[in-house]
Image 1 (cartoon, rainbow, N blue to C red):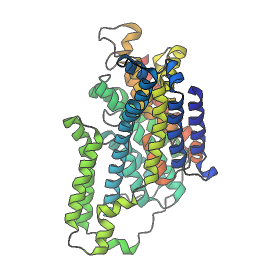
Image 2 (cartoon, rainbow, N blue to C red):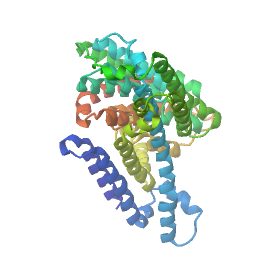
Image 3 (tube, rainbow, N blue to C red):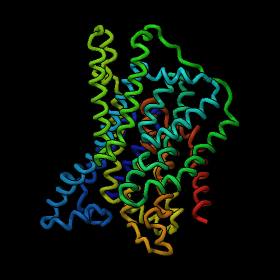
Image 4 (cartoon, rainbow, N blue to C red):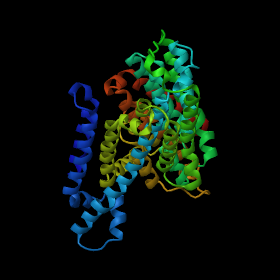
Length: 458
């Protein structure tokens, strides 16, 4: 049963990768493996947990004495599923809130204020402008929210689907690179920051340059090969008079402030980011209702948040639910812990371990991988020397882990929350990304890693 869980996950992953060839939506495949992995886990729980690979079960068993069968059921159904569903729900509600805010701004033509400022149609210039915009925005917001915003912008700037796929993919790479060096830019850096493994100032100092190189190197390569201009989409005349210039600017500012408010909310209240996102959405909703209360029913129908919610991409949300549920089952059963131990035993070098975690994060969600690393390697005493010195607060292991886990997910489109969001919003084909972007992402990933090693490893 332990091996069968992996087999089901791999088969489901292949089905997701071959979505267009099989003509089966990736959300359906993700929901199936997300459920089947837990079903197999529940059926074979006693044998799986008896293997001793699950740290969660070890912690749970210490506080529960009684019949094994009853304890196992309580562990899986009442403890693990509820715990992981809570974590997954935070991501889903965050995604729903961010997607809705972006869609509201888009419906009010707020992004037109920005796109009108970007005059160039030269592919290379546009790519550099958008990449640097993404890089720094993801550090201030986070890579997921930034990707959602930039994908919405790209729809206003680029008409051709495949060209937009290419730019969206580079936005994912830039967003992941930008999120890696900021304490609030990526879920994994937030985890390391809150856990005390890194401090805000040192993570910026240590990872900013490698992250910048990770983005710039692929951009430099593309500058030598990319040619031509982008074709702007045609604006439909019936949409021009929906909003006034003031309303466009006001909703854009309010939407951006709402997104920027999320990390501030988290810092002040220490509550999950999704609550801040939902609060921002609620405020935007109230303002929208007041703004359009005297307008015609037709305009209200198109601009009010209640109407916008009907346009939210539900399959993308369900895809997140399925794939994260599947990964959660592997984490609970001990597969990821076993993998972490294997890396530690076979590699035995902090830089190689972190590089391997980064590559794995392109296949498996980086959150449980980083959580596994945090569980395997406790923060060392500040006076530690030798090998253990790498595990002190702001040690090389933790800083490099923030870089690799944050940027390694760009290697595959499914390897990061930003990639999954772009994949869902633009319907990017997995195999297309593998052929066109993955090699560039690997080159950027290794280039940034080399820079970090030259800065600290030598």
